[in-house]
Length: 583
Ligand SMILES: Cc1cc2nc3c(=O)[nH]c(=O)nc-3n(C[C@H](O)[C@H](O)[C@H](O)COP(=O)(O)OP(=O)(O)OC[C@H]3O[C@@H](n4cnc5c(N)ncnc54)[C@H](O)[C@@H]3O)c2cc1C
Image 1 (tube, rainbow, N blue to C red):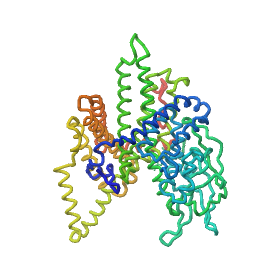
Image 2 (image 1 turned 120 degrees about the horizontal axis):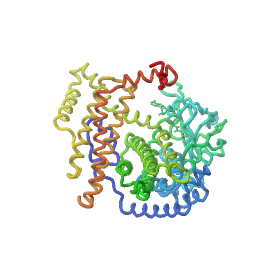
Image 3 (image 1 turned 90 degrees about the horizontal axis):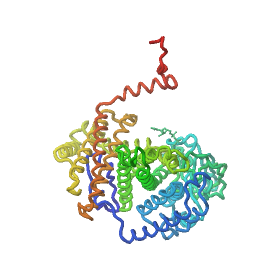
């Protein structure tokens, strides 16, 4: 078992070829008391949702009805993560994620409102707030009397947060004056308290530098929200610009150290991504229900369409997708609840994998329903519109891939750099060289294994082990080839990230199915073993293809094609229809 001070990251260790199986086995389970409490809350959520949540209406009206928001507040969900001492429910991360999943099943906009309030809006306060800040702000945020938002993005600062123009200037009395414009802020028009990021001149290493700093800004201090943005999906949420014109913020409202805002923002988003990943599970489950009902109800050619192989394939893909999504989401929340400190790569994997899997799932569900799926009177088209956002906000999926690959390769990269230095002074550093060679030999002869998986999943465990070995070798070969320039090698980063995502899915499913076999016996757990095997088979095939593409690919040709498109400003080939006299 990991200890509360555990600094390891399971996913990062894979890049060294290490399988820290004590971090994923046994698959996390909720303590019966926590389970009972969660079940009671889920029951209340269902009762509220059945009575009051109407996602088509909130989509049409572009707002959530007041009684839905009031109902959520009454259940205490606005403070589900907030410790009891500040008036919250003080739930663990897994229970919160499961509640987000449940809410998203009924209407993802409700989950997003809650996520913006809690997973990101007040998260910086929870993680970095002083006792004084917490006791001042958390109680009213926990009841929902106040709503929170998180304002990072600007016109010039999307993925690249450092492009931020908002400024904070220190006044003589120790307060700060904030100016700037934030865009696309969820809950912007509802928020009473916003975590705002702005650049502040700070002294770093004896030099004055502009550094992002986080502030708690109250509505009464003077920020203004623009009108609600007209959005493609998740229309029940309120998204606005936030204008800060000479907003005076007291010194006591700086979050963390002045200049530490970038770190704070990244840490907050890291946490927020798990709520989003579990929300995707809820929507996917709902989409499966719709697809199964339609497949079994609709008849064509004298048969239920669900009897046709091509429809069956889609239903199966949805089932496997849900199993994979759930497995990684709750493996990760379980790690966080056990006190694992570094779950940044795991949380990025959950965000990228689950949002893309949901996109594929809602697309499949719509295709099963076809014409009906396209009509506004049915939920499918809304599900597709809603799901599109997930791949954009809380860090785009391209940025997640970059992060997964580069964070993962950082460790081996550092080791190689140290090694290169050691070879320059081999006498003094003989120990390091010896350690490296010994580790290499040991990994080659005796690669890390999964010893805790159930024997019924032997092939799946072997597939995972092979993949880990290959990931480590690929990371090292890539680093040797590109060195520091790996930072610009996005074709490789994408492949390496996707290998890691596939491996994490495999091990999460193996750990989960193992737990189920242990609990029920292999016979009773047959369905789960079947699904786990299918997910792992797909994962293993994906990894093989990605590894092959690391060696043999058409990256250079792709770059040339793109260069042609950029040069000509679009499509660059002659018209597809050739006139008869040209033949
Ligand atoms: C409905 C909605 C709600 C939102 N809510 C909030 C909120 O509450 N608070 C908040 O602060 N922000 C919020 N955002 C902003 C959101 O987080 C940003 O849209 C997101 O971070 C991406 O920034 P961007 O849209 O400017 O895209 P850009 O950064 O301009 O990116 C455009 C494309 O380029 C890619 N790209 C950019 N850089 C790289 C790179 N280095 N390598 C590879 N690809 C790259 C991106 O992945 C993307 O595909 C919200 C956005 C939306 C649409």
